[in-house]
Length: 246
Image 1 (cartoon, one colour):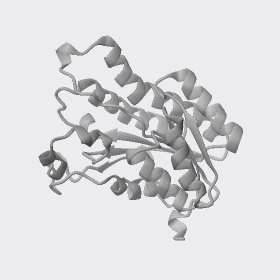
Image 2 (cartoon, rainbow, N blue to C red):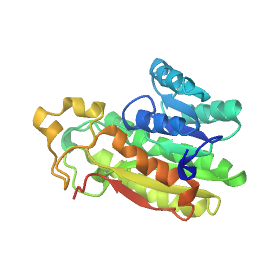
Image 3 (cartoon, rainbow, N blue to C red):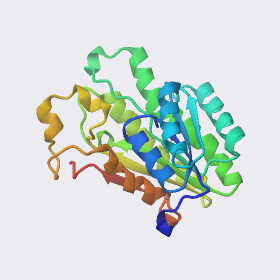
């Protein structure tokens, strides 16, 4: 095990951890020694991932939670701490980005997008961040999007929520310093389940410097780097993993 990326004895909580980018991050941390907590809305999917991690010799906890709701965020936190006693790394990955013309957007859909992409991550980061600061410290990674940094017609609430997430990262990195580091990964177009709705050409080519969408496993090194103790002087940062999108 490379000592820079040895997470033996660490507890990593990943929301949206049963598929896509979250699934890849869960597997990467488990493969490097971490015990993991996998949270998403569907418990069966979380259990399948947990079983994969247990097969590696790790302790894994599967929890069903809609992290756009504060009560379910709080229940998730209590269950995690009841089982493990702490969380060393929190990855706020769960999100949604349903396309809709702005003038046709319903209030309920607007609220759903903001709740899942910003309100829930704020609740988890603030409550777990506070506990980290009161204890042995830790690391929080917020998964954002280049949609917060560029025009995103038809998905305006999503881009706005991710921009709020970026701002939250900077503020919480000061509020819970020096024992807690808070950083953002700004993800570009990735071939997750969201891409199933893309036309075939878009799945092969993207208007980014590398000319293609990312494969989900290509998010892994960014997450490992930001969570590693070797990144102890990195906080309040935004790391773009977007193939050179402008």
